[in-house]
Image 1 (tube, rainbow, N blue to C red):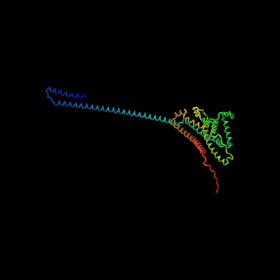
Image 2: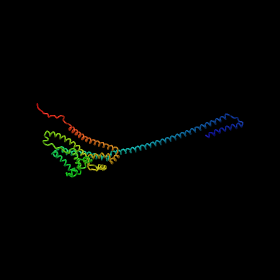
Image 3: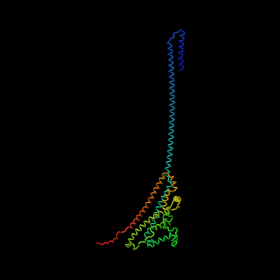
Image 4: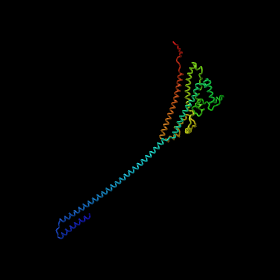
Length: 387
């Protein structure tokens, strides 16, 4: 561009100098030549300027292309970086999710395993429940055995003292008392030697003292107490002509009613004796529980004590409470189901007792009604005659 400007200037200077010399030398000055020079210079300038503009435009265009390319490359690279970062984050997230899923799966598997592992308390529950069931069956046998002895006595069956008369029945019960339960006044009278359990056959503690009657002597004392409570003296039996006479037959009907009511009364108390009779061996855990409760452990317990231990274990035993705190939810639910089953068992036994009470109330009502009933008018005996 500088070269073009210098050439146009040089032409102008030459033309001017030539005109000046022509004027100085007396030559004529031609305007046309000057104009031509100016025009040529103008064209040269225009051409130079146009070239300069084209070059500038080209340079700017090249620069714009270069900038656009740089920006495009930069944005492309930035986008690639973002894609790579997002991809890396996706991989990290996927790996984290997979790892957490495995951890949660393992935790859930562990929870399921813990919930299905047999808790030691369940074994204790089963042992106690089996002991209760066995004791109930043994108690029934004990009650049946006692009834097989008390019923023939009350019926004045052959071989029983009352079969031979009321005096023999009184003498037998008195002699039994002196042999087993002699008191100090009786010993002072020279009738017997003082017993270790004086008057035990007339004290309620012989039956309701402990949860388990600890020996055969204790069972006998409880039975003798119920005998004195219900039927200490048995009426003499009706024998021979007493049964064949009209009055004897009438008395026999009344005696059978008496025997039935006495049998029912004995049956109820025999059931209670059986409930307290030793009938099932205790486990070490049950003995330890008795020790924790301040009781004297026994090797063989009654049905009522086995049931009591199982109920009190869930209510006040420290060891059970500690295990309950550590039980998983499924084990707690099984424990609740076991307690509901035990509740049903107790309700069933309560229902059986209510049946006994209902039978006793019915017998009492019948006896009371019979005693209060009297014929309004004494009627003559009808005579039958054939026409």
